[in-house]
Length: 297
Image (cartoon, rainbow, N blue to C red):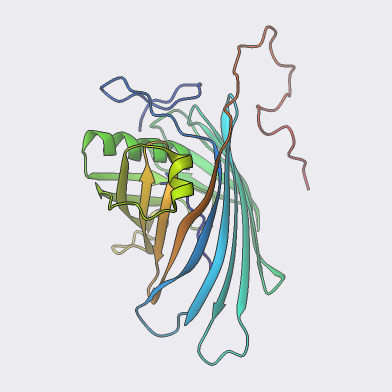
């Protein structure tokens, strides 16, 4: 089974973004500021609704969001062990994903590697761009094969989508639909329909609550419709409990025959960069901040 990395969100998530450390500003002029952080989530089977799915599942997800002056760099690792009726051994699945998203909302890079029982089972590499915020664009895959995917007008990338979700949550707007490209599947982009509501009381540990501090919280139900398939029913759905700073407390992913839940267990708030305008322009060919360490394979 493949657990689609969130943070979304990964809520994964048009608005006007500026090249700074904050996202768009709400009507009350309060900036939406995503907190860079490192988190660990415990994962497990949250329900079985049909035949053919796992009878047991457990795992862990590590998530790291690093902020640079120009972009968000996100690393996600998901390790799952699932047991199926009649199977002699558990199935171990490991998915690693790294993304780089420009704060101006125009560029996105992604790479994903997945193994099953220790053997390579899936790989994705590519880049995506939009012509302008709110405009159309294109995604180019270099792995598993060279391919292109059109991004409709208004398409956005995950962190931008998260900012838009928070913006509408603050305003009390319960419905939000957007086309989002997150590089987690060859079926991208997806139209994500969000239904936003009040969050239930937190059941996180006291240690995690202390680290997080006070802040507004909401719960959203996200339905994913692959744009290319023009489906009338979602391919899957997520229930996400998230905060005003973009940190996700819990996420539940519902498939046809089972559900998997990830719950925040450890959290570390990371420092933000000190961003200054360089005195001299970058040399020609210099990569954007945050991607200098990526070497071609």
